[in-house]
Structure formats: structure tokens, C-alpha cells
Length: 210
View 1 (tube, one colour):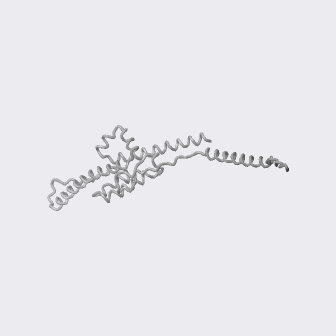
View 2 (cartoon, one colour):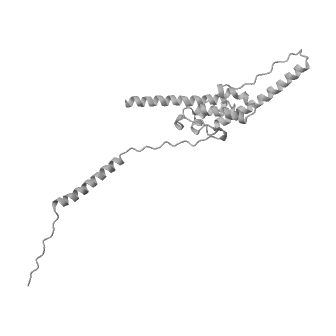
View 3 (tube, one colour):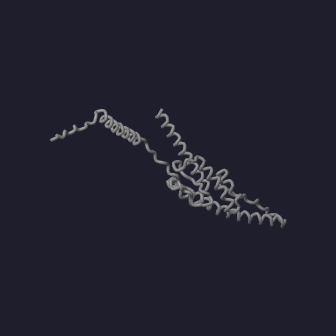
């Protein structure tokens, strides 16, 4: 009877085993390294762009905001310029309002000259009466226009800007008077005052980092 001799088991060589093991080790360590490097990257939150457009559509989205709401340093001048374009389109006697947006001065209607008591010329008297009537009409429209302009300006102020105003002592009085010159000057002061503080803050950061 023939005896069947069992073949000895095949043992993998140490080079093959170490090669596979080394391959897996390199793959894992490389993967971990890349993962850690990716995970350690700093993430930045994108700045949320303001969608505030104000209450008056004809202002074309030009508004008054605080420095931390808008990066456009010319926002104030652009909005005032747009207000100056809005006035002649929507208000009567717009020429009487020019000084408001150009020089931040309250418009005034020049009074007609006093008529001499001894004046008897009927043409002179008729012209004087017409001038007085025009003065009264323009004055009425000016007061109405200033109230409208104030409402437009206020409606174009952001909530943060309005909060600055409501904290002022004379806000109620000036608002009741529809003082357009006051509100424009205050907006300008708030805008550029905070821009100055922001510049100083950034400068201090730069000095600290250096």
C-alpha cells in the first residue's frame, strides 16, 4: 500500500508580510496625517450682506447705516445725493429745497419787500400782492416738503441707526419739528465718528501684532 505524504504548509515570506503591513501602515498614517491637517484649518464665517433697502422705493436702496452694517465709506454722501435727486421728482417747488442737500442748511423763502403806505400805483400794488401770495404758497409747500423729506430720511435709516437717535435727549423735539438739517448732521456725525473709532481700533490691533 502506497503512503500519501502530506505536503508541508506554505508559510508566507517575511518580506511579503512586512510589505503588506508596511503598505497598510503607510496608508493609514498618511490618511491620518492628511485628515488632521485638513481638520486643523481655520474656518471663517462669511460676512452677511445687508438686505435693508429702506421704506422709499425711489431711493433705489440707498440708506443710512452704522459702520458695522456697511463697508461703503461713501454711503452717506451717496444717499444724500440720491435724496437730492428724489426731491425734484416728487415735491413741488424743489428749488427751495436745494440748500438742504447741498449745504445742510434749512431752506428759507425770501420775504417780499414791504409796500410803502403812500404807494398809490395800482400796478405796483398788484405785483406786491402777487408776491405776497406766492410767498405764502411757497412757505406752505416748504413746510410740507420738509416733513416729507424728514420721513424719507428716517425711513432710510437702519434699526441700529434709529437706536442711536432715540437715545438723544432732543430727539423727540427735533422729530416733532421734522428738522431735516439736524437729522442729516447727526447721521453724518454718527457715521464718521464711528469710522474714526474703527480706524483707531484697527490701528491698535496692527501695533499690537507688530
